Amino acid sequence: MARYADHDPDILLRAARYAQLPDIRRAVACAHFGLSAGTLRRAIKELGLRGRPRLVDYVLHAVTHGGTLREGPLTDLDGLANYLDYVNKDGSRAEDVWRHLRQLEREGMVAISEGRFRLLGEFP
Image 1 (cartoon, rainbow, N blue to C red):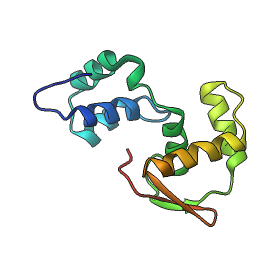
Image 2 (image 1 turned 30 degrees about the vertical axis):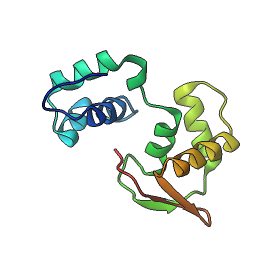
Image 3 (image 1 turned 90 degrees about the horizontal axis):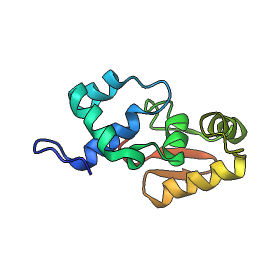
């Protein structure tokens, strides 16, 4: 894993994944995490596939509107599935989105209740 004396490895991993999400510019990721462009570039390169966003990261990015919403409705699972299919070309369906949301819930990132989500963890 990318390790730099003055940076937390978990922050580097989160920044690398965040910087590679759709509609996120690397400069925004650098500013958000307090990294230089060179540090982020090295982290992305050194982390390789591990630094790529996971499908659950794409789901979290979509439901939180890029981290701007802390809570909201989970009404358009078909739309989220279409988004996942667009970015991953995997034929995602609403059931897959629900499975990813439950994974995020198990990881302690979101709470799901009565068709709504609430962000519990840090995102981005």
